[in-house]
Structures are given as C-alpha cells and as structure tokens.
Length: 174
Image 1 (cartoon, rainbow, N blue to C red):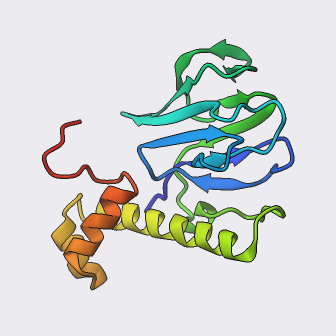
Image 2 (image 1 turned 90 degrees about the horizontal axis):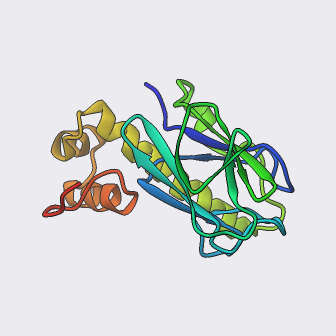
C-alpha cells in the first residue's frame, strides 16, 4: 500500500528532513505557528501554502518578500508537478509522489533546534496522520469498517480523520 506524498527539504539548515503530506492544506514559513517551519532568513513568517487537489498539490505564495518558485519559475499560484523543485525563499524543497515503503513516511533526520518532547510529539502526529490515511484508504473511506479493522472507537477515528484533514466533517461540501 502506498503511503502519502513526501515533502523533502533539499537545502538550508534542515536539509534532508522529510514530512509526510497527509493533510488537505499546509502553511509554510519561518514562524513556529506554521505546519511546516523552514528556519532560513529568506523565508517569510507566512511564506506560502500547499493545498491538496485532485492528482497532487498546488503551491500558493502568500505575498512573501522573496517569493516562491517552481522549477526556477516565480509563481503566485500554480500546480506542483510530481518531483518538481519548489524554492521557498532560497530553501529548495521537493514534493515526492506517494512511496510504497511505509518507512519513508517519517523524517530520517532530526531537527537539532527541537526538544525531545517536541520531536516525539511531531513524530506521533505524523504517525497518527499517516496511519489514519492508510487505514481509510484501505477501507475505501469507510470509517466504521476502518475502525473495526483497527479495533478503534469509530468516533475517535472520525475525529482524528477530520483533525488531520483526511475526511471532511459532516455537513460540509468540497
């Protein structure tokens, strides 16, 4: 079973870090409130966002100072082709297609700026999100069947799926 797509940092102080992309939307920037924090002086506090869409992701620049590029072309908003190199300020990242090897879903390196507690919390969140995405994909999006198979409470699984942006809450439209 394929895991989620991966965002790999290719340059800068966090080179080599990887993030499984399991949510519908990610804010990217150097401020700690972002979903993906890039610690580099050329990255704006709220630099850009990655938005899941049919067949992949879309990159939207959030009026950053140094701009966002896809394969060397400055963009305001554009679809991200599989394997494209994104430049966020002067930090290059790449969105890799879903991997078959589940072990590639987690960062291989650690951020020396983060405490043990923060690192563990991030890994647990990434594990939960990847597991819920895999479980629901395996059961065709059926929360009840997935909960039974995982021996989980259905309401708890639903809550996690909504929290991680894997499942839309009842009463909302796409």
